[in-house]
Length: 80
Length: 136
Image (cartoon, rainbow over all chains, first blue to last red; front, side, top):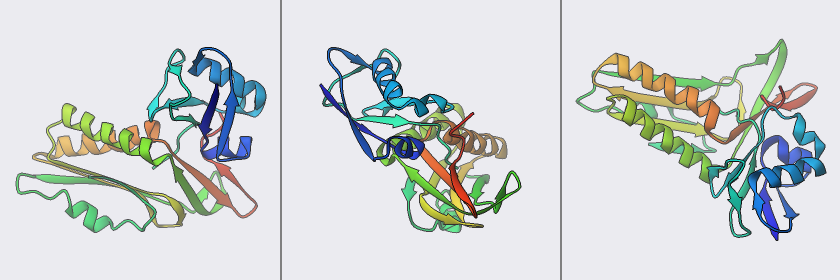
């Protein structure tokens, strides 16, 4: 399936776009999605943290992802 | 009240918005843009947000405060976009019957906001720019 990923902050600069379409076969979890993205964009590994939001909530490594979910990469936040 | 806006924050209006007759005190925190970091001159900050999720996370903070402390009204307003030196990036105000709750809730709000709310700031220097806290 194709997963459309929203990008913010430094992840937008690293990947070079505001969104990224990732194609993955079979069951997809947050951990698998991160694995696929970090192998494609190794600079993501250097970040202090990298979380994945699934439908506006922080996902856990074993959270399942379907193609209709809204997915976003969340690099270290720095509001305030 | 929770708000994320690209407009200038009216700190007086935000603080007034938590006034109620039952309040014995109002505590506020105003986060402003500083002109230097680690001895480098900062020209301005640029904030961006994942707004839908950020609003949800701010609402969680507000709900958690209501569970933990006896407070009356909570206002958390965050600005996004380009913010210049000396301008307000965030204004938080909490009213409570007694000061202890107001102080603690206000500190909890800003500390938790900095950890959980998907808002990012980029420092713009004379010779470059950097996303804050991105790298260890």
